[in-house]
Image 1 (tube, helix red, strand yellow):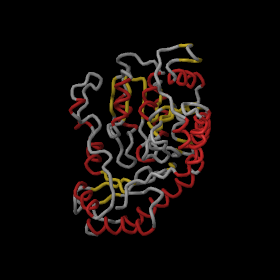
Image 2 (cartoon, one colour):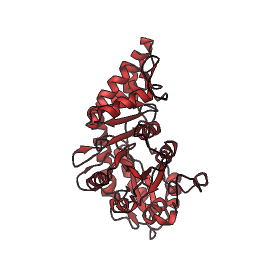
Image 3 (cartoon, one colour):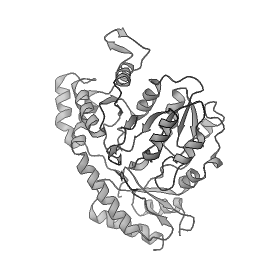
Image 4 (tube, helix red, strand yellow):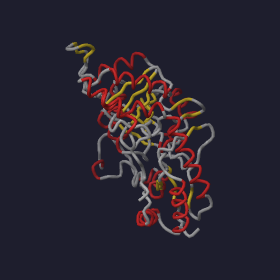
Length: 368
């Protein structure tokens, strides 16, 4: 089997052993070291490490002091954590349709979705490429909206040279399958000193110093063990990203012209870090998306459907008070993409032979 992803954190062994031998494994100097390195990557003054990417989104919303009825506009085509975080923060969710070329929220749709209750714009930088921040950031400024970037899949990505996570408040995931992983973990990035201070207090049970409580807080802390796993990867992020980019280029060249298959685009001005390599299997392809996925699995090629439905199209969200009026049919692009998207292996550990096999097999089963 050629896996859809490979997790290799062996470079972290020395730092992990150092933490274990220190006898202090909770949040400490290794987390600070990781935060400093991450801030450099994200081009921000502050990086606040937390225990997962969902926590990063929740905490970012919480420090904005949203009131009941305040709205957050986001994408209907995303991982469920995006939606769950908004609901946990008690905000009302508004969706805007996506664009097919970058899988991200459409600025024109966002403009139509803004109301006088809208307080936050939360674009999702999906699969490793940023949303169109050249249009979204000015739109947010025009309407006085805070920007929270769901950058879970976009560490190292950029728009016109400006890194993901530096357009407002950035929220990153460090889950096991991400380009940079600490097994579980997350990071919030910001240039705002006051917000950074509030986030650090919030993540530590609301304490500024031991038993000095300032807010009703949470335990959102990262451990030094987790930070130790991530530090060596940050040091070689450019190398890992370059490997992903080379693999994606090879896949796109090899799959170009396959009947019914659209290969992903790298849009002008954007640095794509290829968390996923996601093709679209159109209605005129020899096989449907699900049939192609099954055929590849049978032939030993890992693949993934990210994501099979619009994010709120599950029974547990039906009639939810904080998701007013959302109907699947109102988001035709997201609906079509959810039925067609299929991700192929692009991780940096692929061999030339494996890339050849992926290309040849996809073309063969689609009748190219």
